[in-house]
Image (cartoon, rainbow, N blue to C red; front, top):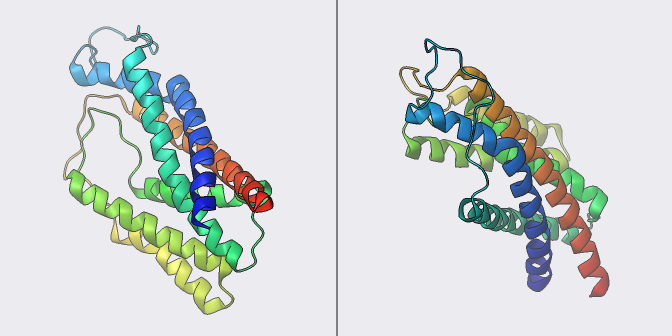
Length: 226
């Protein structure tokens, strides 16, 4: 079982991580680099002169982009280990695991790790006001944990009581509220911040969907080989 989890997670996570990194390079990184121009003061929001929406940005950087590819692959291998371990527990209870059902697992992972936290704490570009990073990390991890538990209760619960508990868990982090700064200020135009958040979530959805597909496929293949 352990070797099957590790093998499936390595293949699935590496493939999904590389695709996620490529999507980030194409869609997310240009927005991030644009925001950094405002953070550094090279561009000024509400300046005297109009600023192009598509300024000249740094080109490809082999070191930076290579590290981004490696980091993304490692991150998604970690995600895959969590996802495949959960799949293994479900398979032990007779739940079918394959590429098709893996899509659902992947979307659930996206909801837990990206969408739910972003409802109250969206992805942030450099140069915007933010609360203490430790407080944000604690809130983020707690939100991920309770959302994952809630989705598990919704998927495998067999009573209205469990589903009611799941709804409470889904709402609790957002009713408590994410940590935010006392005042809002920043150098980055809100249009850029909004575009960054939207594209980060879009890439996350694509990557997690593929991660679930790959994880289910490799799990089924490893099971058949065993």
